[in-house]
Amino acid sequence: MEAPEGELFLKFKVATGEEFALPAVSVVEVMSIGPEKITPMPNVAPVLLGTLNLRGEIIWVADLGQFLGISPPLNLDRAELPVVAVMDQPDLLMGLAVDLIVGMEWLKTEAVRPVLVAPESIAPFLRGEWVVPATGARLPLLDQSAILRSDRWG
Image (cartoon, rainbow, N blue to C red; front, side):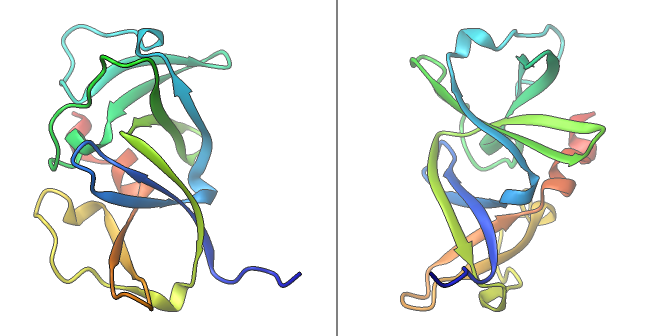
């Protein structure tokens, strides 16, 4: 069996149906949880859904699409909510709630290009876009460090 080339990414969609990807090396866990397991916190930005106990560690959970400024709030009136726990460094772990997990894919790094056009609200959080060789479709690649360390968190 031939070894895969490139870098492994987790693909997912936000509430608008737009697809994004994060490097798998930054993903600690992908879970599907009942929204009632997220404890709402008072006096926080609406993008912060609350906190979650992840194997004894309390982490913040945020609506990624809302954080990026590109989608309405996630529908929390459902049985399960996909949450991607991402880590920048051992001291920084956060849950990013998304609408749908698409899957994992090896992406060839030579097919990654700078983003030519992106909404101003999302541009600082993109590390590039992967261009599908066969179709020319573009998949925005997010920068987890820029997201987790953003001034938008307050």
